[in-house]
Image (cartoon, helix red, strand yellow):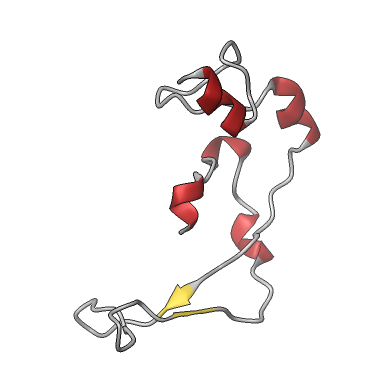
Length: 90
């Protein structure tokens, strides 16, 4: 990881990183921000063969549901989480 990459991630090169080179959270951050909630859920539809429902341009049609899904995070621990890279959100 270059210094420029580290600046994008918000960490310096001498801070701890995981095996893939991504910065890990410090113990103080893990202690202070130790609760987990659901931020966003995206759903999609598929047929019995696993084929996604797509629009006329071939893009998968996604949906959101206005229901409380916080129960999904009840059994999660900080160790279960992986930081989402910007490219993972596209």
